[in-house]
Length: 491
Image (cartoon, rainbow, N blue to C red; front, side):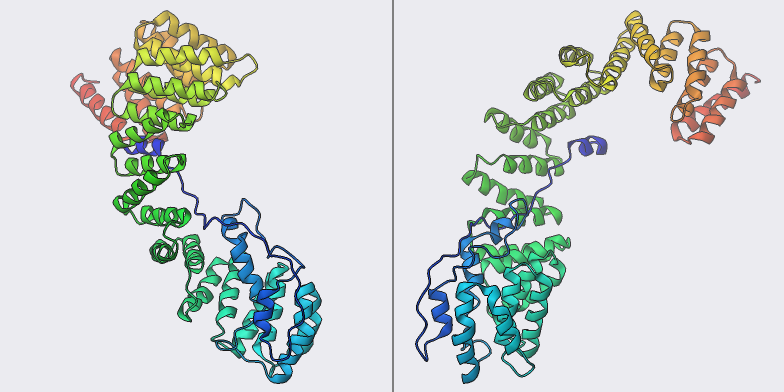
């Protein structure tokens, strides 16, 4: 398949999302724990009434589904407690202070605990106080302060698992994906592995285009959550980015068996087949979408391109017309692009039928550029099929609207040249030669007209000028042939 055709077809970019959840932090208040009772267990059993959210993300954010999850929120809120077997201990005095003065404030309103925690923190104090203060700032979306206090806790106690985990989470929530990789990786090393940590780590690597590492993280995340569609799609993206198309297609085929209603999966499969230059299978995929009644105008337009690339203009026309109908005629530009494809391929009959459909959708208050584009295409078809009168009628209409329409000037010159009217042809070519972007082409066309009249010296002068403006290999070869003919003719 030609590079230009493949560029037209393209392939859909894939959005990387993470695990679909939705959040709430329950609201019951419990009695004060008895002396010697584990404060962490008490807090876990009696979540605060102050909030049901933890630094929530807007729905459109790619991490929103993970972050705004009730279980994820519950675990973050529960992280105000502590695990004395795994983490820094509190002295008896610190435990009393935490239980009697800090814990009640955490239950009612974590922000009210900030002054108590700040008073408790000093270089010799337990890292638990730094960690708890960091978590309050995290919940309040003060990510810079949260990061600073998590780092302070880790300076005192480097293997503090939840501090490593929450530092990574705070950095992710703040969009500092590159900085989040180290604490997330350290969390895994300390035994804090779960699907969400691996999923976030994968997302962070994807943000840095580190697709090999991201693929590994997604694979590990899927061990914990094998049915997580977002992790599976993330893995597909990584496989595509590393050119492992067969592996990506194999996973997509599994996903389509379970989720045949997801249009994005069909589109992605089709685009992967295009990447592999397997156009027949890409065509079948888009036809599946079409027959399921889920094909968008973009899908149908791409289907038309695929049929054109496989030299089936009749089926391409059907797809292009369906795309035009599907968008209600609002996207005339798309239909004109399809018509241009037919014209460039010499599919005159299909082009004319598409022209008729476009005429029905053009309105008097529409884009004048669309009308001019249609006139140019119709003129090209008329010239190519010997309809001289139809061609010049459209071209003169174009030039009446815009005398500096370079393409129309060139086409008009071609018409007069074919009609045996060299003077009018030269007039149009000379006008086009004065326009940026058209000069080189106009000079070559004028030179060809001169060669037909055996005026070789003048033709060579124009060809050399054209090559100075825009050097092209095929023009150089033509110039050399004209030089040879001129030499033999004694010119």
